Figure 1 (cartoon, one colour):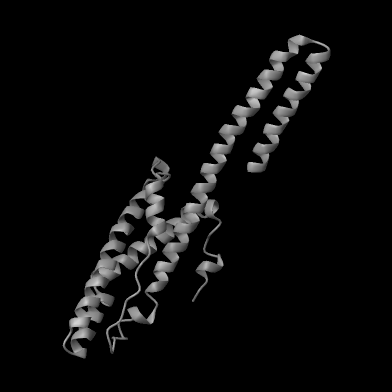
Figure 2 (cartoon, rainbow, N blue to C red):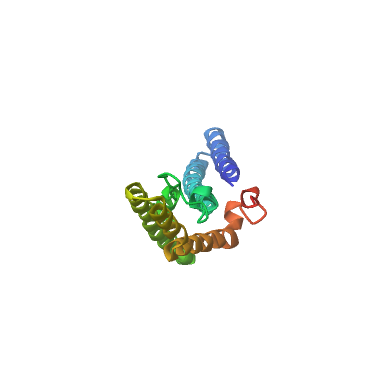
Length: 199
């Protein structure tokens, strides 16, 4: 699309140049038409370039958000968050990322009515991810202070199997589904994309 904008802008500028040169030798009355074409080229180029840039920015944010949601979903498959793998020693749990999520929310791009479901999902996921990361922080501190391995194992089981953890997993899955189902044409990421074929 950007190439079409550039071509249209140059076409208008070329027409303005031809009219300007022609009016200098033949009809001075064509000077106004030349100026009009030059202005039309400038305005068309600016408007279309801004529109294309906004569309590209939206697509890149959606792609980054989809990738971040996928990576966050994969964290729950790591051994550190396996309920059957309690820590023998204190461990640092992997955190859920939310930089792209916050960037998408802060951009204001997804506040239109047709993006209402996405905006709501992003807000819900951001809250759940923050709560989950905070729970991981607290659990790490408690595991460090646990007096025995059974206490540490209990804390680990709590953080990996709690209702809050299941809600985070469900919210991430819901946002991922929405991105793949509704926004696949914009992002180029669908169920067949290699990103989602990981077992």
